[in-house]
Amino acid sequence: MNTVRRWRGWSWLLLPLLLAVGGCGPGVGGTGTGEGFALEYFGARRASVCNASFAGELKCPTRIVVGPAPAPVDDGSDPVIWIDDPSNGRVSARIDLSDIVFEAYCERITFVGTWGTTGDAADRFFGNYTAAGLDVAVPATLSVENGPSGLEYVLRGADGQTVIGPIVLQRLDAEARPASCPKVFSSPVPGATYR
Image (cartoon, rainbow, N blue to C red):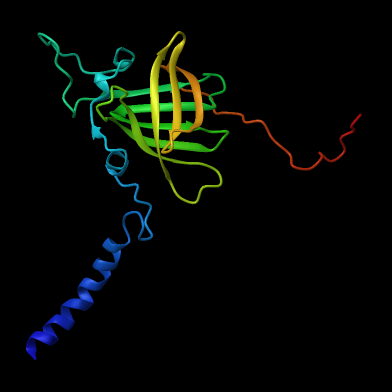
């Protein structure tokens, strides 16, 4: 009888904790976008962005290495910002350590991810993106390649379809000016004349 009373007492204390924990993750009402979720979703493992083909464009730590040796997983770049146009930045990417925040302001697309590898020689950022009209974050990948005039970024959904890109971004060493996005009207502008 005492055991039942003690259990009832503890159950009232544990109930809020169990409800909070049960609400996390995909399929149970949560977004399932916690750290590592996208890597697991794509069957990837975390890697250092300082091993990427474009690592020379980042601010990675200087190491003296004899022979080929990959950068440790925990090594990453100091913060670096990439932008499409310094005078009217409509698309930007901020790489910090081995994480990225990629934003297409006018399209209202935001991708947050971590550099990873799947062993298929196509390492990329694995994460989730949000966009206008989406209720939850969606798994996606962001590939980055060296281009003739900067880095080329391509955001793809989990199905491999391109969401946005390729977009060429250049490294920014100063503050960017805010984006001025074109205004789109669904109805005629009042007072306008049409021919």
